[in-house]
Length: 566
Image (cartoon, rainbow, N blue to C red; front, side):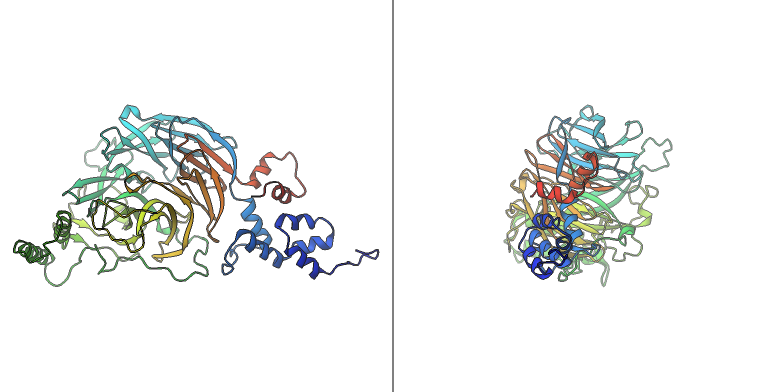
């Protein structure tokens, strides 16, 4: 300014100069004088800085909850948990899974060292308890989940046995005194298990019918199984589902429909309508519902004609043994499958799991409504009330991702399902159920809306995996209010913004990152678990400054940005 206080340069010229600067330089220039300070906070200036720095597509609008472009830039830079603050080394082998209590005060970890460890989540994390599961013939622990009131912990593990053994077990641990309350068989072990209510959990069982045909039974179990009365059920069958082409049900989870209307991000803003993934009546693999005439009679007649034609040499003589088995299984299931429930009015919760129809590789997500009368173990134990012809349950909805599913997670309001998938080549055809198509090294993170039953958003992509189909393993992801995080086989964890679909941070480990989890009470805290046998705690730059600063600093965001450019 001149001696009279008049600016020597007009605001418009300073604005255009600032447009050529980076964010840190703009903030530094704003300290020169009041005029530059005012221009350095200009909304149009920070809009340009935002789109340029984060490389967000220009057609993506600002987050609906954002108050300004400057504050939105600061949110993405200053509140992402990307600063390593603690490394936990108490596990002696690969750490496979992490889960937080709903209060955020505790978390649990599972490992190849066959222990379940429960930790206190204070400013400095400390170990509360370690449960060794080797005395119960477990090979390792793989998954855990706190019940809704944080009084019980579900821990899932794999039995010792032959290399191809698929048996596992679920243990329920009291968080009051860390006592083991009950154990439930779980097959295959990668069903994992999950809570349905505060005192009941879901497990699985698998029954072989043929070489590549089986049925999966999902059971509801009481967490307290030491009931004295023989008239009180501690277990009840939920669903019995046919598996074709060597597929099985795995990775069960429950979505609470009552939370769908909670405030959440506008995920599909500016995006074209996604594809619908409802299972239509003419979709491949859906059970045929009731039609004209008795269904069992029509099925028997169709099967008789097919077999007669096959014996006479008239019906597809080129069918392989596996294809023939699948065809016969499909015909036998027709008329003996309870049709899907298409009304969502009475559904309280959705049961979600991975499955398939073409190969053993999990390439579909099945959805079953859980109705009010199914929320308790009371009632018939083995489905005695079921009609003799309704042998299987049909799926209510199916998502086909055309690739190998290696991870799933729900948004905090349970409306959006995030899926890690390694895609099959475009146009690939599965000719042999035991030889699925090759899978991509890139992991696609897909998003599905469970309220509208549509796919939303384009796939997120940054993380990678390298194992082939028959060695592929689950990589656990997690979703907070604003962010989604996932592990990867490239020795990093990744964090994306849910609204802008951009990768914000890479979190380094020395080996595969198997699991990530946000604190449910503080999304600026993230934990990662790795094959390097460590658990790392990450906090945002903002919370690190708050915890470390002896006194307030005049320009904390500027000082951080200038010293920690990414």
